[in-house]
Image (cartoon, helix red, strand yellow):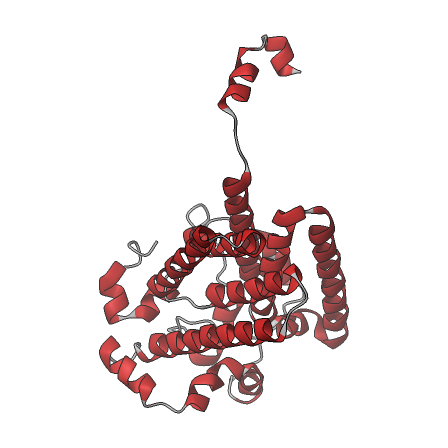
Amino acid sequence: LFAKLGGLTALRHNPTAVHFGQYGAGYGTLGLCLCLGSALVALQAWMTNRQRVTLLLFLVACACSLAGSIALATRGPALATALAGFALVLRARPPRARTVVVMALALAVVGLGAITLRAVRDYSQYEPLGDALGTVTRTSPLRLVSPDLIEFDYLVTLEHVVPHDLNWLNGDSFADVPRFFVPRKLWPGKPKPLDLQLSQAMFGPQTAAGTPFTLPGEAWWNFRFGGALAFLLVLGIAGGLVWRALLERGGPAGELAAAVVMGYSYLLFTRPLGPMLLTTLTAAGAAVAVYLAATVRLRPSALRSIWDRPSTEAST
């Protein structure tokens, strides 16, 4: 995917174009999700066996995940996976003060890195990458953080800047959720995410970046206030039931999936439901696939015995 989006040349001259070129279906980021899932599986294993080789695997997976995040100019999956790792650590044993401090510092470093990555990506739209790096170092830290906290400002923009009314969605964006699982290669006319439609309404059709409106905002746009409140309550109850089922019946693989869903919940809460649900399920599936690849042992002798059975018995 990185090579298809322009590779090192695009990353060096316009990282924003690399990021905004990922409107396929979410499946293109499966490779990055596998790297992130490998880090979680190694972390889960290290907390059990405390072997150096497992810790080394964890560090290598973290390095691959960081490289993949930079290559695709995306920070959300890395931050969500860091939150998932924090959840795994807290579930492994009652946290000691030192564990909480170390994990909090680690999350702070990941968070600051994500904020810096986003700032470099945004500034590179207007100036060369080298100049963008310099601009970031001269920008106030509070200014770097503020773009992640302005969803309410977008509502004010809609009320006072957009010159015409936007129609109520009346459930259309939620009805479209299954369509986001269809690759754009198979359906070239697949609708763009709701946040991109919102950006084009506010800033013009030339806009390439989506404007986060949050899941409560999307629910309100569909069902007004009362309907949005009911929808969010139902969604919260469903999320709690799925969380409990994964932890009680899924074993270590279920624990991994539950941790990933918890980590990605902030993306589900702040972005359109359809694309983020696909991203979350892709990440959870990748983590479980890595776990199975690392733990399932296939015995060639058992496979040969199945192959050598009579056809009727094999069918049975």
